Image (cartoon, rainbow, N blue to C red; front, side, top):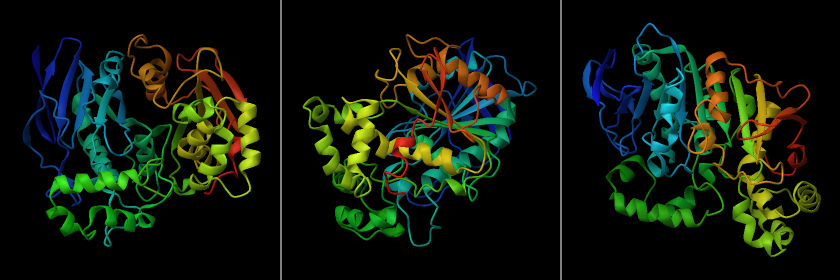
Length: 423
């Protein structure tokens, strides 16, 4: 294993070269003086040891083809991980950077502050300001300044995220956040909390048993904060406890978006009740706490039965947590939008759960590089053409399995949930 050296505005970055691809691990793109303070850009002109992954750092990792130079102008994929805004890392070995680099795409994986440090808002914060998103914004600015030296084209960046990461992708695409740091975006199964932070502030204050001020939280014992967050988490177990919000698709910038969901997102969560035949009854009870509008339960249950009678409660979890946001973005975003839904090999009744599309995207066994979603993403990052019609004006969506086999165009697959949930 040889070392690799790149000189860029950030400084001299030392990574490793395995002969096929080069890895630059855990580059700290910002300076964080205290856990709950906003980050500032990292110093420039530094000697940066990027030979070892440090998942505990708020950092980014870069993987490039072995021989990439600053003259190559390769497409760049920037990945934002999911994990309920509680877990995940820029150093996740399962995010398959080698598969993209081997096909001439530079991949950057962003880390950001999660849970309290990333999502608590203070009185002096702007309403749409969250440190998790601001961290990612600083990372994108670092990429803009430095990626050319790694062989990437700073004018051809595709921002991609899944679940909580997809929510951050959409947040960074807001007009008040978008700074031209990416040309297009892919939001895979975007998940937002049902209630915004201000409506959960009192619950969090009670769980932590301390004032929610920046100084107090910066000085607090980390173990005490962790215990308090776990208490807070249990109060909102069927939802993301914290996260950016509210989603306002009309506030998005005019940037190309591909928005996807899986057919079965959270079927497993509802499986016990659905298997016992009491899923519809649970929908009537749980729906009141999951934003199902009063008086809509009956019609919604019938629509779910027509789609998949064996997973009515599982569909409620899936729609409440993910698919209604997909529909809202497709309906109200000002720019061009493409929608896709992933189903199993067997068709719409098969099982593709939340995150079930990621092995194909990152070419994890048995999926191969250049095939399925991995091959599609390489092509999209290269030429910006999704390969099927835009959602508007005909509410057209692509339905396909994760191997991108037997694709078909369908009309308005999420129309049944429109108007069923609070906005």
